[in-house]
Length: 162
Image (cartoon, rainbow, N blue to C red):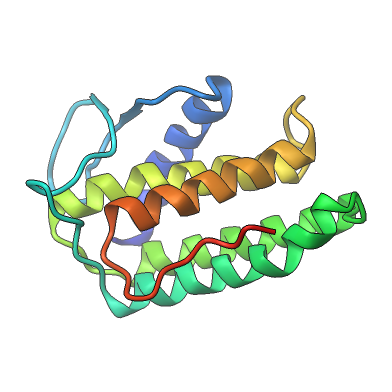
């Protein structure tokens, strides 16, 4: 993925945030020369998980570890607005790194956009940029991490329980 995807991905995030809980997203992937928008839903690659690369796995591991540290405090209601904002910043930085450095095959890349859009939407909620409670942003991020593990190859992937 390249930097020029940030704008289309941000547009997807706006769609996701505006319609929380939707199982499908409208996604546009100009990265690999595909044009037009299409409704996308996460799916396996002919029954198998999508391939990943080292940059993506590192980014997702970092997000997962940040969530693992935060969840116990979130569940005890000891995670303040500044903590949510810091966690959102970490998530956005790691998503940005993945966008800039990972090199996936076109169809895997399209599926990954759906996960990244949910991560970014969760981060936006945690930043307090929506009417939703910041806690809901953490839930959204955790759900995105679950989806990533279900649809992408990542050895030893375990989402924190909190």
